[in-house]
Length: 168
Ligand code: S3P
Image 1 (spheres, rainbow, N blue to C red):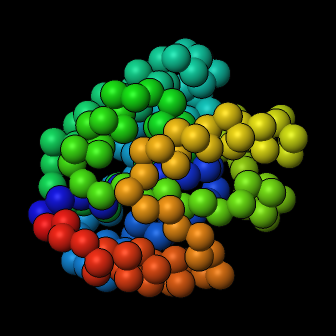
Image 2 (image 1 turned 180 degrees about the horizontal axis):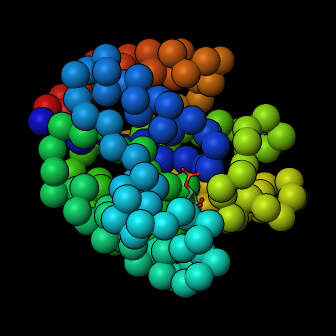
């Protein structure tokens, strides 16, 4: 069975929704950041501080490639996965992509941003990061999800969208 891939900004709820969606569809949830941390044996802030963002992006690309070779996963991507075309080309070949378009100004201030090195420069910078990425999120998604009243509601919406397509 193909994979389900969740993209979107830091803090939009990808990891929570991936776990709930995987439980509902009897698939396996995988979180890219957790995979990277496991393999590197260091936290995301440590990787950024010690080796810099380009090094982290290389780990992320290797992770995207490896997960794309697997099946029956619900993949919670890192928010920056769309920055490299090769990542999304591989993930798109492996399954269906949902962009969780939770408004960035709703995320910032409501979600705990500790442990996210690229969300440490205030709300304006966060909103700018989103506006720089928005086209990539939209352009690489099969579906854009706009339902965020609760994680359960988001998952129900994804399931509703899945019903309309042949994805197995
Ligand atoms: C990043 C998002 C993070 C993590 C890293 C960089 C980004 O993942 O990969 O801190 O560039 O948006 P989450 O989206 O899970 O927070």
